Image 1 (cartoon, rainbow, N blue to C red):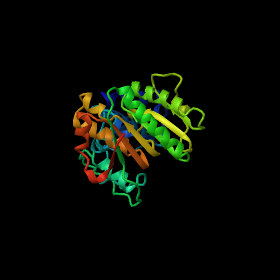
Image 2 (image 1 turned 90 degrees about the vertical axis):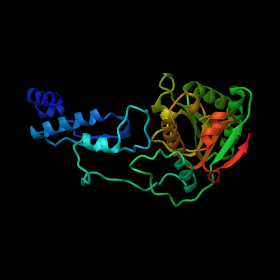
Image 3 (image 1 turned 30 degrees about the horizontal axis):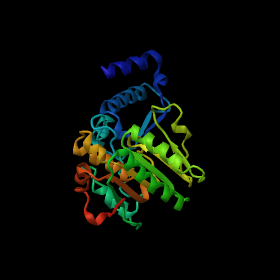
Image 4 (image 1 turned 180 degrees about the vertical axis):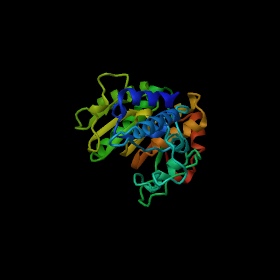
Length: 290
């Protein structure tokens, strides 16, 4: 059916009607296999019909960093969907980790889900051990206040750093954003955020790669980004949401990998957090009580 539709479109409107030129798809693992099959069929028919220049597709993907537990493609599914055979000269594997310090990469690797492509080669750049902050408070509001207190102190002490604060849900993101804005008022530190549910917080208004900025984001908005320092607030919420362990691990792998040099995981002292820490060898982090 897809083949006939592609042929019909090409014959009725000409090959140029579907000529997208060279299409580049980033985070390709977060698209369904059917999309790649459709692209391949359309590209094959248009090119056979004389499209000039010929249609082309480049896909950048890491199957270890999927956004959704069900709506995704593996590297193998992308390859097959695009009609590429194993060992094709147009398939490239990038194995080197240039982003993280060795200590951050080791910590993030604790959540590796065991997918076929494996993990990148470990980086050589050394850094500090990630910090796990255990926060014992009787309400979630007090927990967030304790987290904000430490994040604000760090932001004031390291003004040349680009900092991210990552929340598991939008309600928590909003609360952290408001608390940090109030806490850092008058400090000449820009606190910024983005949410698809808030028309005033647009992605295009965010400033990256500049010091003196604290960026507060949902976990789902953090993929593809990197920061000098990353604070992950209450990832134990992922355990309580009923998500399967595989999805929780993949989410944590993505979030921890956002940090270039400094990583601080801030946990509410409860059973969910204790279960999460069972995945991480003690030697891979420093533990503190807030």
